[in-house]
Length: 150
Image (cartoon, rainbow, N blue to C red; front, side):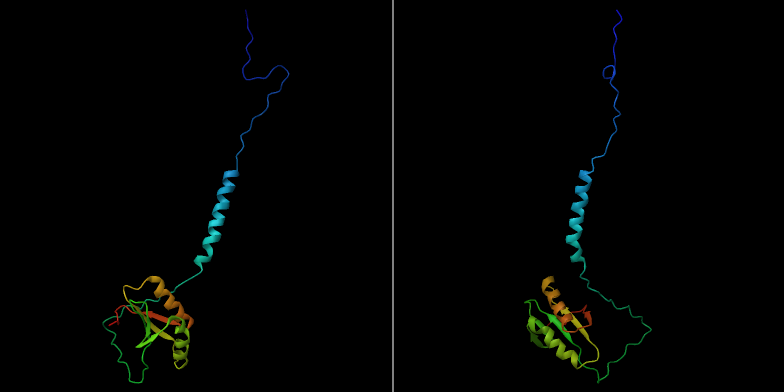
């Protein structure tokens, strides 16, 4: 009447094997490789920088200086709603813009230029004009806050 019941064992003479949990790292390696590829693709896009210098707020105590008659005319590059680029009152084609600005800046000590764009100008067109101006030798480009477009 006494029945022998064995729980969890093999048979007699079999040694019980130690079961150890192990981590499957294959999904972890897959995720890391995907992230590496994403960062390799994004990294070249993060190289472009566009620095913006905002003027400090003037106080009421500082008197405004009157411009002298000897000052040269400021260079104002405008991009109109139809996509045309103008330097002061002269229309300039975009491929010719760097060469034209190089000639203008050759006669000046400072390489300062003012930029204005119509509200309807697409961002890409405005940035292409700014890149061309930078290629033409404009060191400081000031963005106008009040429109000079007619």
